[in-house]
Amino acid sequence: MGEGEKIAMTFEDFNLVSISKEYPLLIQNLSHSVNREEYLRRIWVLEQRWKSFVENPKHFNEVVIFDYAPENADIERGFDIIYAGGTLGLLHATLMSLKYSRRVLVFDAFKVGKTHRDWNISDEELQEFVKSGLFTQEELQRAIVNRYRYGFVKFYDANSKVKAPPLRMENVLNVAIDANKLLSLALEKIRKTNSKIVDYLKLTRVYVLRDEVLVECEEVKTQKKRFFAGRLFIDATG
Image 1 (spheres, one colour):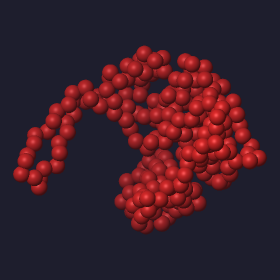
Image 2: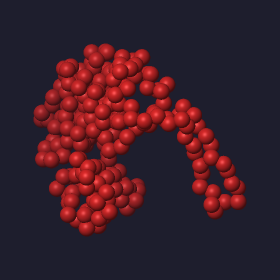
Image 3: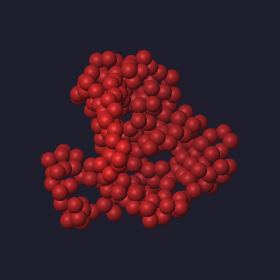
Image 4: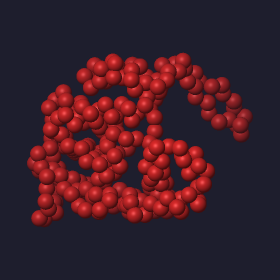
């Protein structure tokens, strides 16, 4: 996690007024969205991360630390698996909690179970959810918003002497999914278990010890530090 990312994830740095002046068309196009500010915040964070990387491509903070833990930390224990990232990570966490009775913690720098994009997938891949027991066929159908006969890949060749026709693909990413609807189903299921969900919590460091992994986090809104311990840590932030 770079220093620029740490700055970008602070709520106080997000200024809707200044963004409106700099990107008026973006604001206009999102003006009718119910979650406009949440989407804008996500876009802004991604932009700040990219700027930080471009300006300091070789600068990274040490995130994974071995055989050391902070002293006098107030640690919440009892988790089998800790997940950073509440989108794809939530799906895996829900399965582990439901099917394998693992007590998991899922946290996200924004809201767990919310994403800023829709997903495309194939029917064959969707069936893996059914086989695993995570979703029923009926639940998946409620999350499907469209189907496509085929897709194609076309490389830009306007400036090339070598021209190539579009490459047609069938049964690949041809099912459009309402990602938030699918994630809300997973969230509903995992909340019925003894697992834990925490919104607006970002990953700071991971301390790898002999018998456990200690995860240091920071509340995005208050910058308060929090510590959790588990047997396994999975970074699903993307």
